[in-house]
Length: 153
Image 1 (tube, helix red, strand yellow):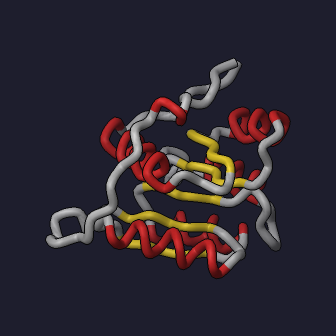
Image 2 (spheres, rainbow, N blue to C red):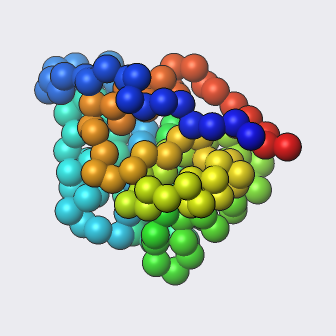
Image 3 (cartoon, rainbow, N blue to C red):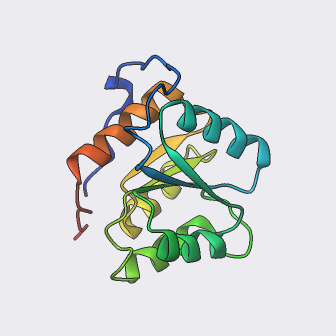
């Protein structure tokens, strides 16, 4: 079974205010039911020139992924209406959204949720509290490589 990259090997990234509109085309969808988490993520992403969309539940993230076509999704495992794992499976089952990189940001550090996420097609899994520099570097890596999902057999 393939595993997630070793995020400890990612170097911290300094946060600098976005001074140009060059990066504004990159769209990130944040899916988290906690307003303070969304605010923190939105702030750091906007400072790094990302356009941010937000969803507060699993149903909304599935709909917004299809309608808005974000470049990447940051999703909590625990979401209302439908959980993050179910939302992930629905996104992967839709041919128009199946290619979108998805990074889980979860408080669940146990192996079982991480294995379930990988098997469902999650690209990366970060445990909260997330190191924001590592998260930004991981996002950049996913967006620059256009990595396709590796099928687990």
